[in-house]
Every structure is written in structure tokens, then in C-alpha cells.
Image (cartoon, rainbow over all chains, first blue to last red; front, top):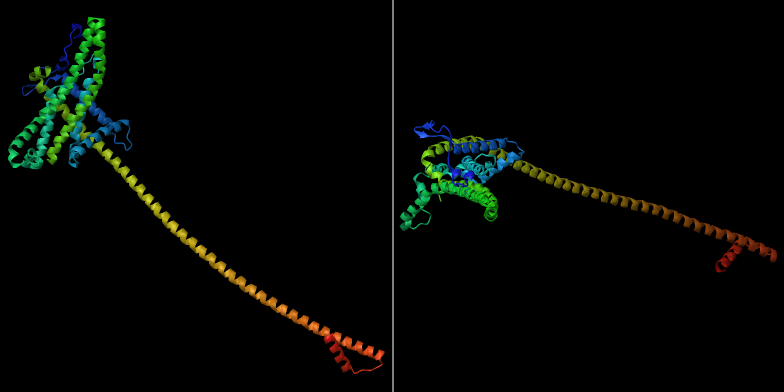
Length: 261
Length: 164
């Protein structure tokens, strides 16, 4: 790319099959092992190693165990604050969700390009984030109907709604409820993609201005590079925040399902 | 935008592998290991709470023991003070008794001595009378050549001794 003098900021999101591109099919659907799949596997494996290292069950924890216990305690506290005592049983799911997205986001930011590898952020694909958001939304719906039966529909009629307004409010609340899986999945996808595009665009400024002339590099390239450093720090923050937001909103939705309003 | 451009070609692979790896994460990490970690934390919290409770109970017991020891100590001290006061009272009475007895003995001795002195005075006065009477009769017989009656001389001497 750089050799051509042009940087395509969207190229980083393209999916390449690594193997099994033609032969791996289930019921006619292709399930090729792609670079996206590889990073999902790396995220899952690293998360496994991280938690396994902290599951030593020592009464006096070491540093690693403290780190893992901090995360489980964080998720536990988030559920306790948003769902209450009923939320305890969702700790495994919310923990998996939060940590999986967190690891994916951070892994996508690793500067592996320096050693010739290409990090891939699968959370910048709505085909991946959509699966997670639909998963969360399905759990909310299943728990809601299993726990409250048809009374779950009272979620769409807030307390104190005048009888006359109930049909209109019901429709509005239903729409806002049904939008949740889309907003949940799209938020993560957009936030991750935007940051990566921004970094890529700034890096293309640095490269093309550097190729053009020294004066242009000083005017445009150097400030862009400095800005990139700042944006990188911001992206690390966003990576954590987006994972937190995803997990937090799932908690809030689970609260609706568990406790209604 | 590869996310949309490649969607038709890659969505099945994306969904399938995400479900596989997230499923692995959920079942192995989330359900397999997280409860153990949480259990360890809960166990530790419980142990700390138990230890704190035991320490609190031990402190309370120590306080109680100290209070009872203090009460016992105060009672003992009061008893000792009472014993001392009693002994002091008894000793004072005994001293007073012995002083009174000694006083009585001394008074008796004094009275005896005074009696003896008075007796000695009387006998001395009588002897002086006898001597004076003898001397007076001798003087009278020598000077006047009179032989006077013994009783008359004695009464005259007595009268002179008394009136000076």
C-alpha cells in the first residue's frame, strides 16, 4: 500500500480467508477460517490463559489472581448495581461478553504492523458485534418471558401512563425496545471502526506528506503523527469504554427483564 | 467498506466462528472458571469477616474479664481496708486498756508512798517530841533542880511545838 503511495483506510477491515475458503461448508454456508476468525481465536485463547492464570484459588492472591479477581469483582458489582441480587447468575455471561470484547478491542490496537503482522479488529464488523448484541437481546427476551410470562409486555407501559395514551406509548416503547439490539451492535462496530479509520487516515497523511517533500512533512506529517499518538491513547480508552458500555447496557436490559420497571 | 462489501461472502463464517469462540469463552471461561474465582473471593471475604468477628468477640471477652477482675480487685481491697481498720480499732482499745491498768498501778503506788511519807512524818514528829521532852526535863532538872512529872513535860513540849 505504502509502496503505491496510497493508503486505503478501509483495507484494514477486509476479511481474507486463511484456509478452508472453498471446502469448509455447513449446509451450504461457507465457514472459511479467516483472519477475523484467527483474532477471535486469539482473543478467546488469551482470555482463557488470563483467567486460568488467576483461577489458582489461593486464599492470599498473587498479582495475577488479583487482576482476574478485580475483573470478576467489577462485573459482579456492575450486575449488583444494575440488576440487584437477581443479577448474580448472569456474571458468567456478562464477564465473558465484557472480557471477550475488551480483549478483541485491545488486540486490534496492538502495533503488530511493526513486525509485519496485521492485527484485525473483529469488533469493527457488525456481522460479529451483531451476533453478540442479538445474543444479549435474546437472553433478555427469553428471561423476560420466562419470568413474567405475558406480563412482560407491561414493560412497554410505564407507570402512571394515562389510559388514553397507553396505545401510543406502547408502540413508542416497543419500537425503542426493538431498536436495542441494533444500537447495541452498531455502537461497538462504529466506535471501533471510526477510531481505526482515523488512525489510518492520519498515517496516510504522514506517509504521503513524507513522500512528497520535507516541508510538507513538517507542516502536515509531523502534526498528524503527534495527533496519532494522542488518538492512540484515546483509542485505548475507547476500547475499554465500548466493552464496558456493551456489558453495562446488557445489564440494564437484563434489569428490565428481571425486574420490569 | 469491506464490512458491507464482503458481507454476503463472509457473514456465515463470521457468525459461525464468533459463536464457536464466544461459546468457548462462555462455557469454559465464564461458566467453568469465573465461578471458581468468585467462590475464592467469597471464601476469602467470609474468612476475613469470621476473623474480624472472632477478634471482636475475643476483645469483648477480654473486656468482660477485665471488668470482673476489677470488681474482684475492688472487693478485695475494700475487705483489706476493713481488716486494717478493724485491727487498728482493736489495737487502740487494747492500748487504752493497758494504759488504764498501768495508771491504776501507778496511782496505787503513789498513794502507798504518800501514806508512808505521812507515817514517817508523824513518827518523826513523835520522836522529836520525845527527844524534846527528855531534853526539856533534863534541862529543868539540871537548871532548876526540879524533878518534873513526865506527862507534864510532854504536854508542855507539845504545846510549845504546836504553837512554836
